[in-house]
Structure formats: C-alpha cells, structure tokens
Image (tube, rainbow, N blue to C red; front, side, top):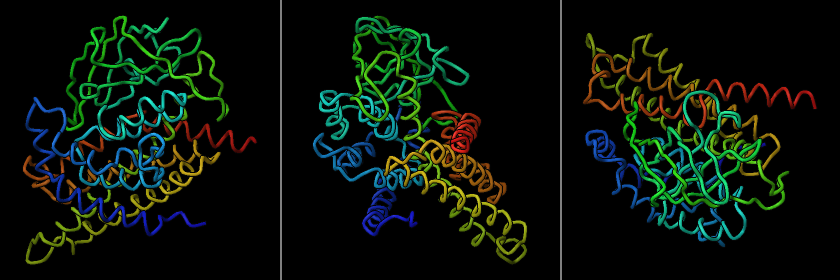
Length: 380
C-alpha cells in the first residue's frame, strides 16, 4: 500500500512552501512575540485567506475548494515549518471540521462558506481547566438556546468571531455555535509559553447559542447528549492535522541543526564532524521518520474515513509530539550557547513544540487513547 502523496499534492506542498518562506518569515513571527498587543499577524493571515487554503477541505457546494483532507495535511505541515502565527488551525482543523461532522445541511451552508472566505474565524471551546475532559467535568450549561459558563483555555479565543462550545446537556453534553461579539460573552487574553498562538478565557452569561444537529449517519443520531461522541471524532480528525503541523516544525528543526553543524567551526573543523553532534542529528532524523510514518498512516485513515482512524490518529499524535519536542530541544543543544539566546530562532520552535503537545489533549491522554483503541481492535 502506498501512503505517499500524489504528484499534485507534492506540487501543492512545494508552492505552499515557497509562498510561506516569502510571506511568513521569522520576522513575522517575532513581530507577534515582541508586541503584547498583537494576538496574531494579520498581514500573514489575510494573505493565507486570499490563497483559499481555509477552504481546502471544505466541499465546493459550501464555498470551499473541495480538494480533500490530504491537501489540508500538506498545508498543515508547511504552516508548521514556519510557525505561522495565525488562527488557521482553530478555524480549519477544529471549527470547520466540527461543522462538517456535527452540523445539519442548513448549518453547513450557513457557516462553512464564511470559514472558507475568512469572513469568520472559528475556535473550539471545550475545557474548563486542568484535567482530562469528560462529560462529568463540563459545567457550562445550555437550555432553550441560551448558554452560560466559562471555558479556559481556548486557543485563538481572543481572535475568533465564533466558537463551538461543549455544554452540559442532561447526563451528556451537546455542541453549540456561539457568536462571540454579543453582549453575553466576555473574553480575557491569557499569557502562555507561546505568545504567537493566543489563548483566552471566555465567559458566557446567557449567551445566544445554536445547537449543532448532525445528520443521521456515521453511527450518530440527532439526539440530546451526543456531544462527547462527536467530540471524540472531531479530536481524532484534528489530531492528524496537528501531527502534520508538528512534523513540519520538527523537520525544520533538523534542517536548522544540520545547517549550523556544517557552518559552525571549532578547533579548525565543522562541529558536525564530531560524533556527539552526528548522534544528535541522527536521533532527530529517526524520531522524525517515525512521526512521518505515523502521520501518513493517519492521513490515509482520515481521508478514507477508515475504521482505523482512532488508533491512527492517536499514534500520529503521540509520535509527532515526541518528535517535535525532541527536535526542538536538540536543535538548541546543537547550537550550543547561541541556541539559548533571544536572537536565534531555536526558542521559537521549542515554544511551539511545547504548546502543540498539549493542544487537544496531552501526550498522556493520547497514549491512553492509543492503548484503548488497540485493546478494542484486538478484542474484536
């Protein structure tokens, strides 16, 4: 079985890389990092919107390009290489995929075209503090189209115009779309290890909300309390896309470390000639290739709606999180004393690696999901 991308998808990757290397440099990333008043780089964001990438996996009938999930994986990897300081993932991986999976035809027609053309920025608000997410620790409530509660942290919550919110519904939970510009919503920006991807605490006080009503199919029925079932599927889809973003960052870290090892001389020879440095680079390469294999398997499962998606998504997420963190750490070590300075870009990748590792669930959560998926598969 061939899991590699097609020639057209590789062409898309090459063109996306050229575009982002020119339009999203480290200077654009640092502009957000150095300015406490900037939540994202709007110049880069608008250019990405113009490219139409937000609609890559949105069907043409809803205003998208109708390319597919594999193309979105390709774009995600390239965005990860340059640490794009934009709310792309929140809109494309989480909000749009939630609407596609959990929305009715009418709801898809209402919101997906607006995501595709960038007129709205979406996010997903599920957690209410530390700990693994479950129906028992969801305290936000929704009744008669009115929602109240607090969600924290919400990635890109201070940028977004709309949020999909997980709210308590009987003994289960439901998913609701909330416009964030109304009087019943207040937002507070949060400080994190990675300021180039903003986060917020969002409080809902009798805010108007629309419940997502999935079409029958995919093992689901439009009954109350199925929000957690839907959320599991949404997280599996987002996990694969996040894995590609992490893979892009890890690949760039290896390139940075390799280039520096060739250029930096000590005692009259490149430091890359030292066995210790060679071992560091080789270890990064091995972890990156393991992550790439798992990410490609996840992309196949995602694009074909395969039954193996839960285990493939978990494996991709675990491997990519480990690879990006390791690559970013070893990149700093390879650069030596320079790697720890503000002027060198190594810390930008370390920050993003730490952030992405806990977005949509920590590695520990995904390891548990992987074990559960394998146990279920083996018991069948």
